[in-house]
Structures are given as C-alpha cells and as structure tokens.
Length: 283
Ligand SMILES: NC(=O)c1ccc[n+]([C@@H]2O[C@H](COP(=O)([O-])OP(=O)(O)OC[C@H]3O[C@@H](n4cnc5c(N)ncnc54)[C@H](OP(=O)(O)O)[C@@H]3O)[C@@H](O)[C@H]2O)c1
Image (cartoon, rainbow, N blue to C red; front, top):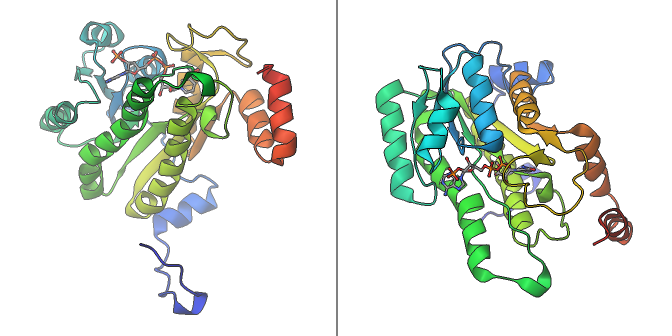
C-alpha cells in the first residue's frame, strides 16, 4: 500500500535526466522520431483497421514491421510487397502465444524499437442488457491482454534503455457514454494505465504514447447503427498516429474537431455533462 508523505518527509528528487530536460525544452513529451528507416516496430492487432493501416504506413516509411493478430492470411495481405515485414500470428488472449511471438521476434531482430498495442474490440451494451460473458471477453482482450503484452516486452525495452510503447485506447475512455457500458471502462483503464506507465518508463528512456481515436471507419465500426461524428478513414488515423509519434506527443488523439469537443465536455459539471451528451446522442 502506498502512503502519501508530507513534503518535508519526501526524499530528495533525483536530478532530471538529460532526456527529460530536452523533451521539456522542445515541448514534446517523448523524443521526436525523424527517420523510420530500419526501426523495428511490432504492431499487435495488425490484420485490419487502424493497426493494419499503421503497419502499412510504417512499412512504406522504411521501418521493419512485425505484424500480429489471429488471421495469418490477413497479415500477409498487409505485408504484401514488403520483404522487411514479419508475420507473427497470435491470439493475444493466450499468454503462451504472446511470449512465443516475443521470443521469435527477438531471435529475428535482437531487440525492438516500438511496440504498438492496437488489438481490441467493441461491443454495444446498456444497463438493461448486461452480458457477463461479453464483459469478460472485452476485459480480457481490451485490458488484460495489454498487461500480457507489457509483461512480455517491457523487460527487453528496459534492458535496452530505449524504445517506445503505444497503447490504443479510445475517446470512449474519457467519460461514461451511452452504449459503452463494458467497452468504456476497459478504455478508461488504458488511459490511466498509460499515464502510470509514463511516470515509470519516461525516466528510463522509454517513450509512451497514449492513442485515443475518435470514430474510424474499420470493420469494428461497420456494425454501428448511429451517426458517427467526425468519422475518418483508417489510413487517416494511421497518419495521425505516426505523425503524433514523430512529434514526440504523449497524447495522440484525432480527429481534433471531435476529440477536443469531448475533452471539453468532460470538464463540465455532471449536471451539464449528462444533458449535453443526451441531447447530442439522443440516448
Ligand atoms: N474504429 C474506431 O472507431 C475506434 C475508435 C477508438 C478506438 N478504437 C480502437 O482501435 C483498435 C483497433 O480497432 P479497429 O477499429 O481498427 O478494429 P478492427 O479492424 O476490428 O481491428 C482489430 C484488430 O485487433 C485484432 N484482434 C482482435 N482480437 C484479437 C486477439 N484475440 N488476438 C490478436 N489480435 C486480435 C484483430 O485481428 P484478428 O481478428 O485477425 O485477430 C484486428 O487486427 C481497438 O483497440 C479499438 O478499440 C477504434
């Protein structure tokens, strides 16, 4: 258990690392990435949607990319024409498969520069329709699997003393929203987790990226029967993610016209927040 200490009881603060100092001077929270050539990137959740387009874009920019997801044939379609790509099929909910893929990746590359945790799923749920099996699936895929991947890759990143980790959460994690009874809490947890990771990893030379997309047209949103404000393509989302990392951002969110509106709404008192969201969504 952690106890809060009075200021006088706190140990002396360690000197800020040169890396932290330079990041602060440049107003970027992570070191900027100027060149992707030869960078070793592992994208987990790369067979379709945001992960597939991000993997494609990084391959086009010259990175070496390892692609993971359950559907191997889909991974090969994304890799087509890029001999520097590596397919590492896995089910991220199976701990042994994540570790096996990690071992294959390290045997091939002897290290890794960036791990992007994209795999996830959305299920609509409301209070009159709670399905515990679905809740468990979402918790396992969207949240526990992120811990599984962190457990698999952090020892390597920490031993290297450099590299980065990106977690794809969602604007649905900012605040409670209708229909997101199970999905929203998994994504809120990822926002909190990424913030905690930054405290631990940034001083050790590891970049952390919290990625919060708004609505993106992918197989996951095809099922939505409601208007999706600010909907963008998966290719556009990939450009936002890659450019956010290049600029050294911690919080990469897009499209800004939608995400900034939600970020403002979450600052409102609840007596204003609830009627506003009800009015906008009709839910
Ligand atoms: N689309 C949006 O509007 C939106 C908005 C905010 C956040 N997000 C988040 O963005 C991420 C990507 O979503 P998307 O919209 O691009 O959906 P998507 O096209 O359905 O992609 C989901 C990816 O996760 C992989 N995946 C699912 N279960 C897996 C498992 N058990 N093991 C390994 N990989 C698994 C899928 O591959 P396989 O099926 O081949 O395993 C696929 O590559 C998700 O975390 C989602 O919550 C999406």
